[in-house]
Length: 172
Image (cartoon, rainbow, N blue to C red; front, side, top):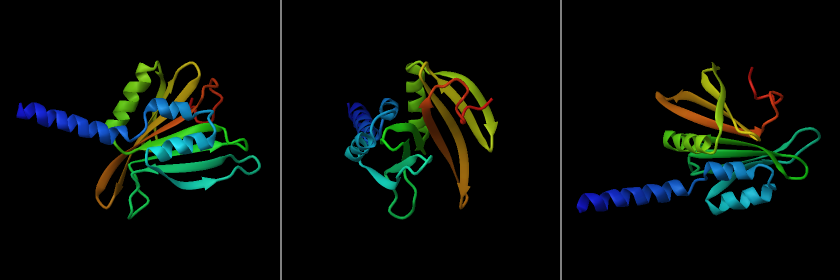
């Protein structure tokens, strides 16, 4: 009985902690939404705005948010960046996670949603994969970095609309 209680407590606490972050479905849902909708959704889940730049000429605006941001550095558990035009409509979503468990959960959900591996390669010290469904594309990168003798793996998910091979982040 004690083992069951401890197991249930661990599952509940990990669900609460993990549940504070965003799901891959929420990441996908931000595409083509207005920036204030995304900002309000993230703020309600304790994400902090770290940078915002307005669109200028041909340059898209960008806004970056951090989850569980460190008080002592620019580090965080996760980052999400949106690119948007003058109308504030989100055109691309860039998500960075620093947790293998979260990366695996995102990959499992992408595959369950019908995203298929189309291409992969190793470049610039990272494993790069393209997963697509009929309308959306994810460029996913896994890369390690070392600082002060500590090695960390960073996972990035770059979401954009599927346009054949026309997108600049689609490698040949």
